[in-house]
Image 1 (cartoon, rainbow, N blue to C red):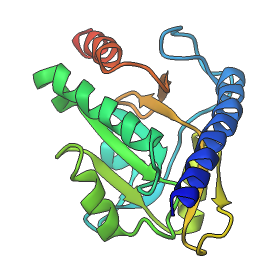
Image 2 (cartoon, rainbow, N blue to C red):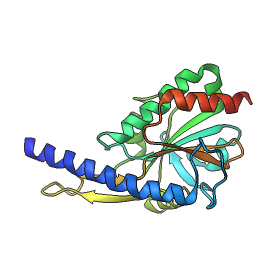
Image 3 (cartoon, rainbow, N blue to C red):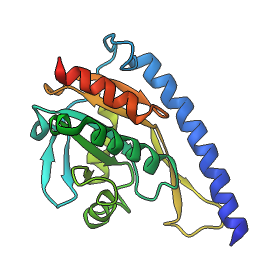
Length: 204
């Protein structure tokens, strides 16, 4: 058991390193970070149709009028996903009343395991306003493609078929109230930094 845990941990670290490298290349070639304030050369974001953690079909248009903090990941992620979701929710708490103008979204890249019920249990661990979105494999693929998100299943040696990790990009996307791409907060951005940036945008 201990050896298996170590193998999974090692694979997870490798997966994160690989996906981070790919994602960093994608974002540097498709858009600049929020801090730079420049426009994206390649469109990021767009229409999606998914199912929220209450079983309701939603589209991107349902969230117009609010800033969106969007993170793509999966509930079985051992480290980076809960870390980044924790940062998102901490930023909301730091914003205070301004957080009412922000909608946090967690979109799964693992729809096979992340059912509506499972997503509902998971997002409830972080923040009452965090919405989890899942859907069919095609729906998730289209949403990920719109946001230039990389993801791929990473089966583990000597593990059961449903015991796999997911390689995936790790960025928090910021979309404006009009649905347009504003920028990204790279992995490791602090909750203070996100709250400061969002607060200034909301106040402006």
